[in-house]
Image (cartoon, rainbow, N blue to C red; front, side, top):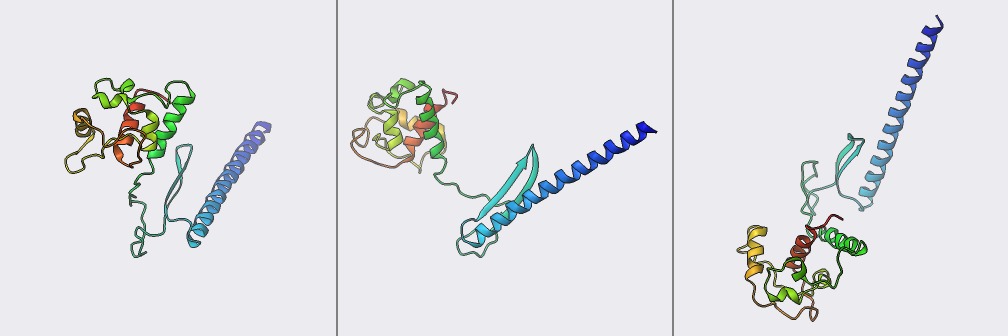
Length: 186
């Protein structure tokens, strides 16, 4: 009989703890949803949210609109055009590699790509980060993929300007940074 009570108590305790955990989880989700809804109402948030905890979906929600005119409600299937926000990641990766002593901002592009034309001996990693490399922009009308762009850079004979002398925002700086990172683990 003592074993029965002991087992019953254990089952009851596990049931209560599971219930409390479920309640706590729902409470957290409710708090998050309330926060996101208030942020949206205040014009501070519009987007898709997916939260997982230990590989289990906790919250999946679309809040707001898919267009600036607020005529198309946002759905969780909508995919945003992220634009240039990914560029910060390769810049941070480069800075981490410098901290680890694996590269230096003064390293020339030719160190990583010795088969590029002589212009690669003039451009530093710092120039790529600051968009002062002199590289021309990607030829969007003819480039369909990274291989096409790489061929264009290998054929490039002259930079648009001397590295470090002028600022010109373009995607070839980012392209070269990302290719430089492929050789390392941050």
